[in-house]
Image 1 (tube, rainbow, N blue to C red):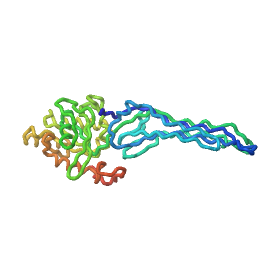
Image 2 (cartoon, rainbow, N blue to C red):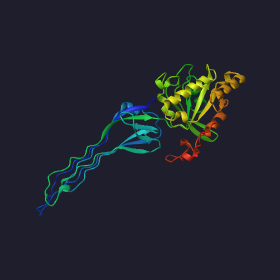
Image 3 (tube, one colour):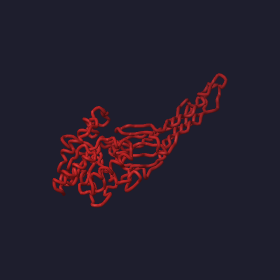
Length: 351
């Protein structure tokens, strides 16, 4: 399945149906009077968040969504049928933005959550509603109110409890493959990961969702490399795991580069708690691990977890630290529709 996290679509709610001009025609009733009914209401445009979707690829092929218009009124004071609402199903974590992408119109984060974005037009008045003491036989009716229309952008921000960040070739794909059932592509070249990956981690009778995004490089906020486009997918994470390659040229510099890019992106990423992991320790001796861990602490890391994504060494301690920042029940541990209490989460303090 192709991954798509942004899409532009056109939406239009239904127009209200016209009212009717009608007069009673009954035997022995000389002056029947008007009996035209009102038109039906047009259909609404509704967005619904559903589980089981993690891409907006469907909106690449279908970009115009129009709700049904209301039916016209009829004689005997019969109101026209309302138009059917159009429900657009989107993945959890989808935001609906205006055409300029400046204002968020809806943010769908709970399973089954619905938002009426455009309301259908009201039906027109039938001639019965125009009857008065001075207008006994009105022959006018309302045409029905038009629906609303607009272009909107859909932007998907994956819902994950923890996010994985680091430079290219830090071993993030190997890491997520080690602790989840994800089959992320692994390769010895930059930007092996070209789109976000999601996996469910099960640890100590708990489970949470982990998101892996493409690697960051210096200048990503200005578009270098793959850029910072995918950073939006970790905006909702409670904790970030910063993976650093012990084989890199300078682990302390790698730490600084990613921290600077998170700060440049904004959206609160630089305020999120971070767990620093020194990866690939299976390839070096213990003395080098201690030396680089000391340098990372001097560079600002509160604590460093030496791990090996290939062998799984050190994973338990790292995942224990991640669990400390998660609520009593994560999204995957809660029944659909149950609202999470924000007080369940642990406040950020250095590890």
